[in-house]
Length: 589
Image (cartoon, rainbow, N blue to C red; front, side, top):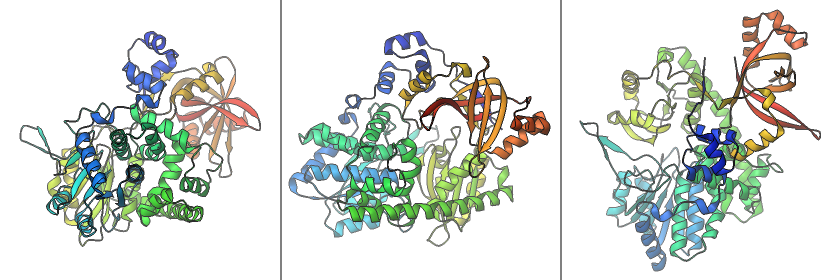
């Protein structure tokens, strides 16, 4: 069961349309996405590189740049401490290439997901001391690495933290938050409570990019050279699922343009290995094809493979690395499916299904896919979900959580840190570890203190506007392309219409998994509708509502009484040189 909501933000659409020179329809779509200031609207409609914010506005940027410049001038050794996911990969590449361009003696290290866990740790710090490293720069991690950074300081190693995750805090008796920062020489994170940077939603690679921009400025390197790094930053931005507005939109728009004409040997090899050669690379390609392959290296092998793929100048090595990443991702898919089925079986066969916050322990799941599985379970039940599995350490459980918009997972878990050994994340996702003996108490507390309502736990679909099918035109579809690239914070526009008569239905596809409906518009036109959802459920619901006889008539095209409300996206179907209008049906009732 889901609830449909029609967005109805009150504003002067005529004024917005006239000021920006866009249609009222586009004006409404912007306002529906909470893009309400003219600066943000202009940045959205005309996303150009000159609208990127000044990197020097970020707290501690001046400190960090002074330290790095002095290290380069003195010939000191710099080590980047990254993370094993796509955003971490992108952040490492951004810093490495940028620092190398400035003449730095630089290398990088990535923690092993299973052996080390997330972020910089004491082993890595001790290894840096042994390797005579003078400066460590973290990326996509470090904001909660209190002990490792304290150790680095005691060993005489300077540390600059670049991160984008939420700041750890302690809540006092009055409910006020006392934020905690590690003892690094500079902490560059736009989410700092004392940072005045105008945009807070950069990913880890985005923060790394701003550091390199400031460094280039300090070293008198043309700022346009920094734009060469946007291929990597765009990948991190899409794959870390941050809002694609403001700077992120500019980064992704420009990054995709460069990716589609890339000279990077490794990226070309990966595009070829994943079957994307000759196609236009978009946010879907990055988020669901290329990104998962890069993540697979950190999940099932060494994340270094993915970094080396993009650094190598050897085509044979690039092909080898790319094929390995593709193979690892196929293996990851199989493990994910198996783990997901185990978790669903455990929920359905126990009292877990009564919980509003799902905390599921399954020792046989590979910890590297716990987050993906948590996301899928969250989507199935529309519940905040934490999937835990057995760690390599004795009696320790480790896992990941994924949340819904109505539940701030970071804050809720923060209230129970006394049960945890490690924890980090943000409102929609978290990683944690705890003693296995504490799992039941952890589950009990999360469910005992949450205030989620029945409505909170009901999936919601937000409709941009009611739009009769007769209004759909080629011009409208082309105009909607101005909203691309789509992603979090800028979903594909959704329109709705009521009481649409279905003239005929067809089940298509090799696996009989596509439903095509011929829909009658108010003026008597026929519009094709395509639905990729659960066809068996569709047939069951139609037979229950209208009768099996009417469903049979619908499939035969002999005048059925089947009538639908639909939520849809208009599109252009191109087949054998012919173009026709079509709607992609997202939801129906």
